Amino acid sequence: MILKCRDKNIELGKKTLIMGILNVTPDSFSDGGRYNNLDSALEQAKKMVEDGVDIIDIGGESTRPGHTQISVEEEIERVVPVIEMLSKELDVIISIDTYKYQVAEAALKAGAHIINDIWGLQYDNGEMAMLAAEYNVPVIAMHNQNGTEYSEDIILSMRKFFERTYEISDRYGISRDNIILDPGIGFGKGMEENIEVLARLEELRDMGRILLGTSKKRFIGTILGGLSTDERVEGTVATTVIGIGKGVDIVRVHNVLENKRAALVADRIYRR
Image (cartoon, rainbow, N blue to C red):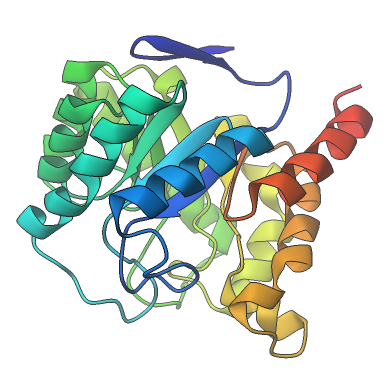
């Protein structure tokens, strides 16, 4: 399937796409403070392109557990200059990682191609969906909830969440083909819930295309005996391969090269 991203196109299904994470924040759990100026952000983006990235995801507010919410104005000040620069310097698809429609609108005006919403179009009163419809851009809709308690089967609960996302997208005339589903590993889920969702990813496959974002998350460090964030690369690669085996289309990662190589091997086996 060809996913139209404004003036660029990307093909889903032929290979696993690599989305590289570029957080221009001082406090993100993995790379906070590393790329929150224009020079370092551009250098990292260029490295991602050299390593084979397909999409670069720009985030201006940390959404790690216990994060401090920042204002719309501050988030715009962080992301817009970076997006404008990358749009001029690099031929790459850019997504904006935000749940605030005002930030998404500023990012789209600056040159972004995709909206990555950690609340699956359900944070506001339809403004994000209206914006996506106006610009006719794809939306990555992540499953999320407050707290980690589930009163029913977790996959069933996630399916109901995504149905609500689809209801909203239908209301605003967004094609369901323009929605990429993200199971939200690490969001509204504890250790065991993360593992269960990963083990059962194929049960969401009939609902649409899937993006998997597990990169360096806490549950990987816990499985590996309490390893620090920077020591979780191999564990992340393992989840990438598991996800590809279960039918995901995009993986969102910090370490592009390692996951790209793993995806090439996994694709050769699973997509033969």
